[in-house]
Image (cartoon, rainbow, N blue to C red; front, side, top):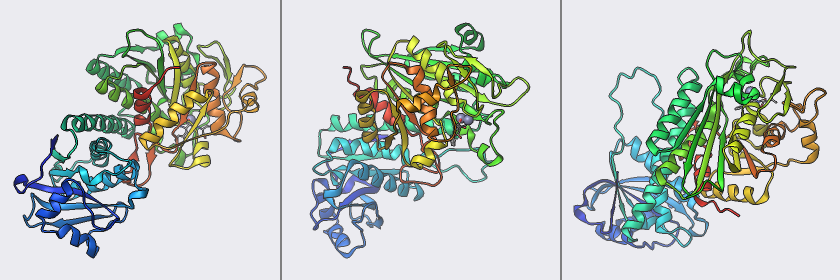
Length: 499
Ligand code: BES
Ligand code: ZN
Ligand code: ZN
């Protein structure tokens, strides 16, 4: 897919060359200078005349009529160099690759030198190139009986850089893995509930395990009964589909210590159960396994890049259905931890499934926990659809998650979880906990409930109900599933520091 080259010349014969242009008096650097020279100084002129805009993420497509080693130039504006960042770079490249794709060009070259600045080096830029390419050109095939020929994908990309060839290649590989893992998660989330049952998800995880040599364990209903996973079983009670508790283990250290537990909500469809959702609220609930998808996407990246860390991924999976056997409001259930739960709302099912998953992750030795879940509509009310909501019981662990999210360009914002909040979760006349203490602050109530099962283990909760899907196309992907938190989780693992 990628090749790295150090010298750009006339014989290169590329379909297009992607260049970046900063808002600064026509001063090109590195290989971009050579491109301008070959073009007889035209690049300088086009920027001067404004035919190539230097505005942030503006795209210009210019035919070169064979004057340089590429038929076309795709120039993307990078704005002021002072304001430039890795994030702008990644999005600018996303736009450029979208342009390549819609122009049905199957081969491209990138002038990497044109995208570097003081704060962004060639290796960052290489990472951004492969990641942005994979993310921005993603498409979910869907199920239409297409009459036209399928579109051809971009097949090869040449990267021109004056930096060390092997280092650039290594960064391209990392970015590529991050993009691919994210896209896998997007596809899982885009799959309709009838195409991705808990069994399908378990099979998918087993395939990953086979591909990357992970240890895999799939708990069946009988196993859950033996282990007393009454919370996950309650959610599954009304379903015709068997539940699965999916466990993947990746051991990158000699010993099984400093284990990071990644737990993802895997509700393949959420009707709300007997607290049934209104007809408008139920549409889209195939995405209620976005947390599970994030964890599986991250595991794919971990399998590709093999960091020296230990990870256990735990995914509780079922749909949440209505039938004569379904669990009901007022039911009291006993979780694997022994904690009893009064069910006040059958639509607050995610926290129940996660409760047993968190307990089970601890049984597998998780020393640090992150749970990811499309948990509450409340988080959308609180933070909108661009920001993932977080809760935490440990400052240092939260700091590591926050750092990873910065690097991934996936913003998170922490909500408070005070003793008074916990009291509401712990208030039930007849059980230890209740699963729905009322609408006030309900993103906090949902996450806080999961935290009851993390107990003293450092834990961060990520509520992606607002961020797991996008209503519109954006620079790094199409409308639909975003694959949010895949890269944050992968980076968290890659950069993890034990205390
Ligand atoms: N899966 C939903 C949350 C959700 C809402 C995800 C919108 C994606 C988009 C979750 O299981 C749910 O129904 N939560 C309830 C909790 C309430 C009953 C306490 C909610 O948010 O209304
Ligand atoms: Zn629900
Ligand atoms: Zn749900």
